[in-house]
Amino acid sequence: MREDGLDVIIDKIGNIFGLTGQSTGKNPIMIGSHIDTPNNAGKYDGPYGVIAGLEVAEKLRNHPSQSRRPLMIAAFTNEEGVRFQPDMMGSLVYAGGLDVEMALNARDLDGAILRDELRRIGYSGDMTPGAITPHAFLELHIEQGPVLESDNIQIGAVEALQGISWQRITIGGKANHAGTTPTRLRYDAGLAAAHVITFLRRLVTEYSSTSVATVGQLAFKPNSINVVPSQASFTVDLRDPDEFRLCQLEQALDAYLGRLAAEHCVIVETERLARFKPVVFDRGLVEMIVDSARSLEYSVMKMTSGAGHDAQMIAHICPSAMIFVPSRNGISHDPAEYTAPGQLDSGLDVLFDVVLKIAK
Ligand SMILES: [Zn+2]
Image (cartoon, rainbow, N blue to C red; front, side):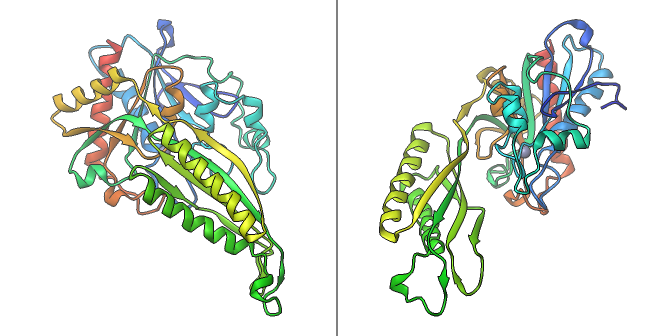
């Protein structure tokens, strides 16, 4: 950002912003995404949208019709939520959805505190999150799913984003000898956890084709080959584009956990890690994306995002929308994540065209 002549500002939650042409006094057009990734993941999820912002800033500098609005390139802190929860933390704090001091107190599994970690890496800034209200926000991102590729479409105009429910469930049973404890006298937390996992699959399969459920993290205590687990702790990720359906799923899981506790004589505790309602993006911006894609002769479709994104947070403070480009084989959060250079360029073309339209 500095090499490109942008004014770099860091806010208190570590969000990084690069600003151009602040002298106009107008609210900036914000473009961005995040640069953190899950463990051993790909290189496109996130950085593509930030680097595209830098490209737009450069293209605009060399463009004859000077933008009448400044640009604000954003790299939001901790979008993935791998180490500190909740996910989409930087944009959530920026949009006023979470108090910055509370967010800074987040601890990782080793007990490290986010506040200290930001200081340690030199990204604990002065700016109050949310101090600059964008005129509009655009996030360019890989789809992270198979829809665009399978329909042979070049550009996705994202009009909505599904709701996300994250919780941690801890089941308490009783540790005992794997050889001497008869099956009928076991209070097996691991078995109870397995029941929850299969219940979730059955639930979403029977309930709605739009619902998905994932248990992505699971840990046993004492975690020994010859001991019945006394504790199973695991995460549940539930998603649906409809808030009512997402609530129904949560309630069904709650009811099931109650029955499970009684039947297996185990103690079940739940902890809410994150909860985001579905988001509908700005209709005008979505139409602009569609129009830009068409005028540039790219095939385009409106779609719902299956993943969470910073744009869903920023949508609370300004008109926002997202542009998707295809992901090869729909793979993301994996080193095999790939989008061809030509496809990356197509997304950038559309983003630049929309920025020109908004700036005018
Ligand atoms: Zn992302």
